[in-house]
Length: 493
Image 1 (cartoon, rainbow, N blue to C red):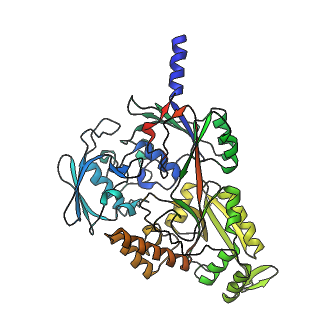
Image 2: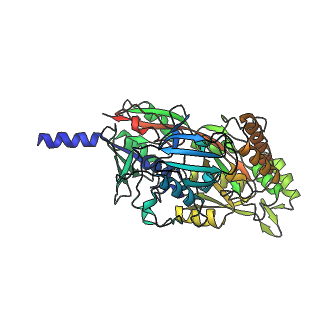
Image 3: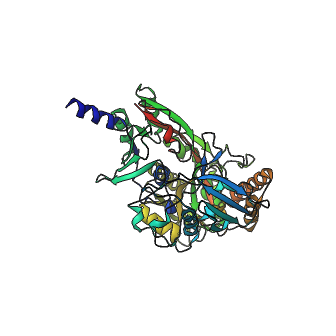
């Protein structure tokens, strides 16, 4: 009996349980759209190149890479010991398949923009793949951070969200999927016996207020983000350690520029002047206000662009110029009061608090607002595909490349708001093609200014973030964008 109890204790000690507000809807990097999915993908899959703890690019599945003299081709040699979870080797065919599947229009991958710079991928030997680029690339390895998939698990490069892979994923990452549990949790186990954490369990805990209590009661070992109101409670607990990290993500309120009245720049400007952004931020945490599509620590952030501020008089003037009149406290045109619908993803943390606050502010300014929260399938159908919305309350998350091209290029795959400005397209092209980092920085700072002036969206903030982990978990290093990238160094007592 003592042996059984001792063994059980040892197994439990190696199980790190963390919470997500909502379990990932799909486990397939081709279709990732939430940070919950990104965190699972980081555990299960690997890329050719990745970040080291200093956020410098290092080979992962790749062993080496050789760039041609004109920088339009790169030959990547894979590690000879890189294997899938079923024991088979990772091959050049897998890399070629992944790139072609991402580029395949019928696949409709949310990650397609990440391989747009690759014009062709071909096998170049038993362990090598040749990548051809549409133009010279200064450091293509910085872009080769998308996850690689096993070609043998798919019938063709036209991959569907409903393919069996979503429930039986095979990767090459440090953890493999054990099972989906009846309570919506997901169990994963380490692929090596030397791992400091033997097992990881993702638990779905929809009540964010309850997550901190589960950590204190030792029913969880990790929270990926602590609510601001819980920080003092966890900070004073000797069994919990807080880890600050800076995410490369920002919140926004996006206008559907194909719909009235958002096609009118006067109305967009007026709505921005009606909103007290600091008052929206205060209840959900602390962070940096933004004037454009980069975080303030970015070299591309244009600090000369002023932040939007509430200006009731200015808002009224803009609404009058747009043909509205104030009747009974509501802005009206053609006998109909202006009524807007704000759409947010159900899994977006703190979105409900922000949306309700926004609704109250706009109503006080004379605009009726309806609020709706969509589940993942409806979000992808209505927002990603049909572009069926008035205003989006959402956030974008980026890696260190901070590539906003797909969001703001006229034909960008993630340009849901239908923004189009030829001058911005030229600047984004210039930034993409620049061999000189200073040229890229200047182009993106100009794009920041132009996008802010066009107001396709109201830029809100980037949040300060803290992870919380049990003190039983040692050697913790949190990746600011993906969280679990360095989990192989973590240890549990």
